[in-house]
Length: 438
Image (tube, rainbow, N blue to C red):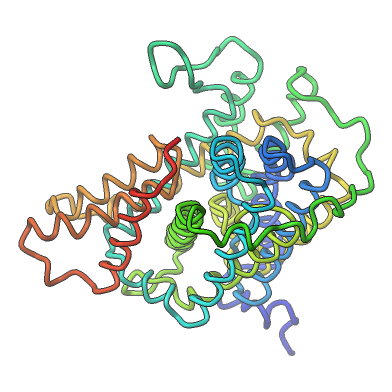
């Protein structure tokens, strides 16, 4: 009896998974990252990009990239406009440096084209293989803590901007944080009992309790037609971005996207057990090409740098192992064009617990770090703390790539440094030199 098409195409049997598991994993990934549908346009609105068209661009670029990831790369990784890069464009490039959002999108487009070329030539894959095991393990652990911090902040359990301290515990007597605590405990107990769909079930139950208890509210309407994309479609200014004054902006975007993608792919790949005996992600150029093409398309549509999302770890934890998971996420994003009122109604206090728990699941690779060798542990530690404490994956990754060869030189082990690691060192050094700190 011939195997079903989905089983053959996505190799479900070889990955010890099923259609049901992959669909569930796709639902979990989508629910944990559906916030981007409204958060990305809300951030870019500060740069002058209209909210409605920006929401449509966000959804289409995410759907396009994730479907390419699923169908071509066959990995359970979802793609959407990056958080961090969108804030960099809105608050630094436009509001502080004074450039137009059209010029910023021109820079995004240029970066996407460069990434496509570097991916097709194999340069990106070669550089990713130059990353030592200890740094790869630190990517996963650092991203895990980064995700947890996002969840704690979204839940109101940790707040920033409090006088006298950079962060502080939130108001644990208010409904939002209390609901998030309940959701985190619920998901924890479900995981302890090894119940399938723990994250999705926890999100749904927590959201329903939130609606009843006054944390968020059920949508007034569930379906609506998407706004027109015309005000931002093909409005990028490529010529304006090709100036010397804009070099630092392009370099910053390029480095952040390159390292965010490499770090995320290796981190979630490690969680899924995809890394080979040399701790490399096989055929990494395929998911890299998916995110490069998504960035090009996203810039044309009117949104910022697009790439692999760390929330993919949520679906992987639910058992997602093939591109079918990504296909489900991509199709749900397309549905989001018409169901945005529903998806945006789920309160952050209901999705934050899933992010907090995913952080717990991703921190385990820290055990792979060789703590007996300071030339290895110091760069790895730099990655982990800088990712979380600067709220910027790119800064953490760059910090590690700068520290690694320096520590090896002082340890008398310079000969063991991969030649491509020096390329990453130079790129990251330029990142810190030209980063628009304002």
